[in-house]
Length: 131
Image (cartoon, rainbow, N blue to C red):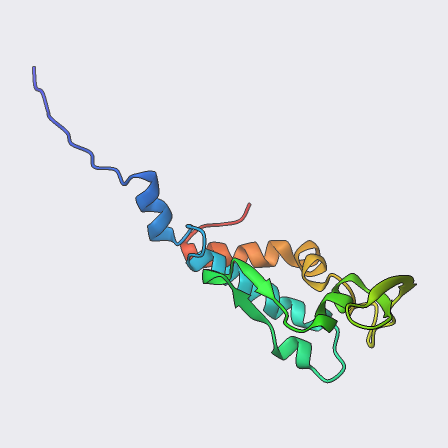
């Protein structure tokens, strides 16, 4: 009878998460944020392009996408505002240039429309596939 001793060293789940960049604020999170903003640019409200050019990633690694300026909030919700700052929303919807592609909640709509392509980009970066 022949016996063999086999030692298998497996990475811990935490090691795998770190190697693949899957931790919060890691490489995959930043790829997701970059892809979402890049693909969402054509849906972002645009008059002079300031909103598109002002996007920032708050928190480390793209965990939060931030458009500075009070008008960004108004554009996001898509309601005409009235009064002095802080202005109050009305029930009247905003009219966007190049609507309906450009309009409110642009990143949510980008994810809804392009999530498979975004996931494929992320999968390619970490050596996986989207099924």
